[in-house]
Length: 204
Image (cartoon, rainbow, N blue to C red; front, side):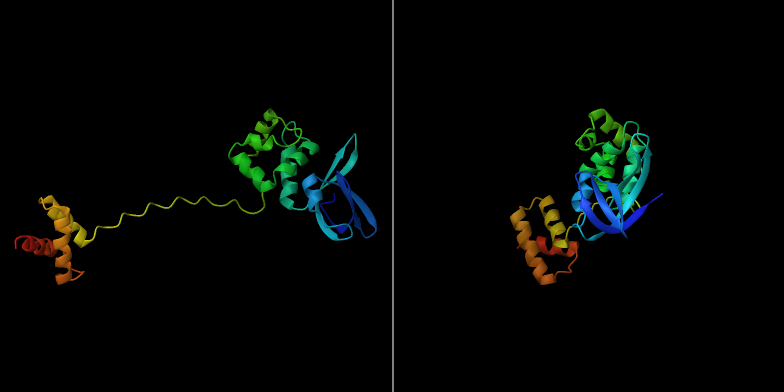
């Protein structure tokens, strides 16, 4: 079984590409998205292959530029009703990472954008692919949401103002006398000292 080709792009058609490997031309069936991303004719490329056999067509090579695309192609065809043509159509509209995301959020509408894939088949695809390793690399670990920051503790002057207002002092007067007390006693003055100084100022 052929799993990968490294060769020169000799031709690019509507459904396949001809890859020249040391004088031997391999016809590789590709999706439209893969064909559009191939290097220009005459340049080298590496294609990951899925080798399949069908009675009607005989052996056929399906090519992808990324291993994750080949993996998704195989996983898609394991689903009832999905053949090579439909699998390629799905990957044309949803690269592996997007396909995994669509399956995770049950987004059958995204899958149904693929040519020849109806709503029922799209629903089956997202249901059967959910949780499966479609993309390369480990699945990102769940990160818990950060805890909300604790509210800032009121300043000593703020607490002193609130205490004076609780005693019936108007806010404007409470702030005035506390500000004066803070200037005299310093920014590090304790709440009780500010309240006492404020009351003394109000009593004058």
